[in-house]
Image 1 (cartoon, rainbow, N blue to C red):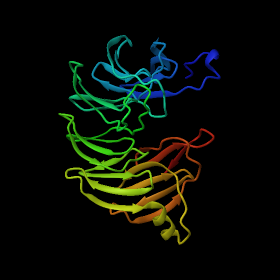
Image 2 (cartoon, rainbow, N blue to C red):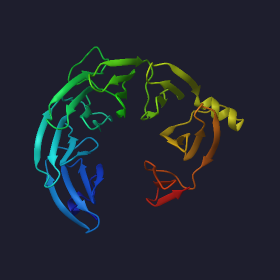
Image 3 (cartoon, rainbow, N blue to C red):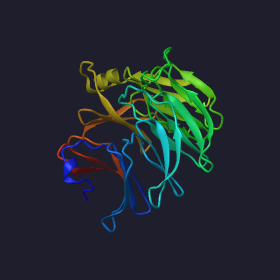
Image 4 (cartoon, helix red, strand yellow):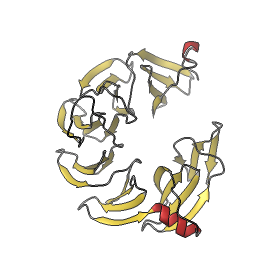
Length: 299
């Protein structure tokens, strides 16, 4: 189904998508928000709000929650797309590759904006419960650029990687439990009480989120070289997952690095086609789009 008219044919569209009860909800960088029924192949409702949307989408009961490029958190009625509430936060003049990010539990909406401020908003009252700024720059002005990562929520804790540090934060109070001097370009993963992350200098680390103790830290480029018995090269990592009790890392060159939970290399395999999308897991299979926009399915 093509929602967009001919005048938008040459416009690069960035879509944020979520599926709920048979409907696909989409926001985009053109300022559109719409609901599409894939069973009936028709648009249920569509609105244009003029300001580009710039975050993932979350749904809580009858609410659609997202944000725009002005760092406004916007809550819509799921039935018709009407605005229920707008929560303005700090706007940055300079736009960068970091996009606003949302996470959700049964109590709070967690929202981190491009200024580096993390907010907790009550899901029912839509009131701000707490907020902190994670931008470590001395110059906290509206043009300052924040580079961070997606929010990871686990039990009573949040994990966020910013420009220079990785934070473990109490979900209820916003207090910083631990601050570690490593950061990651990829979203970290929490399994039970352990955090797994790939640092910017290509180290795989494991950390206990309860006490902040580092379990191990391994140079991934060195591990790959030793496993293949080759010279050390600089690999580019795209996605990090935990699958069947293994750490699985997707590389830019479409290889997969599979490690045991203790960080030792189990195997390295090449995907049958070049991966160009985020992989998803369905019924023990990996699904992704290749460079020709075809769906590849790998066991």
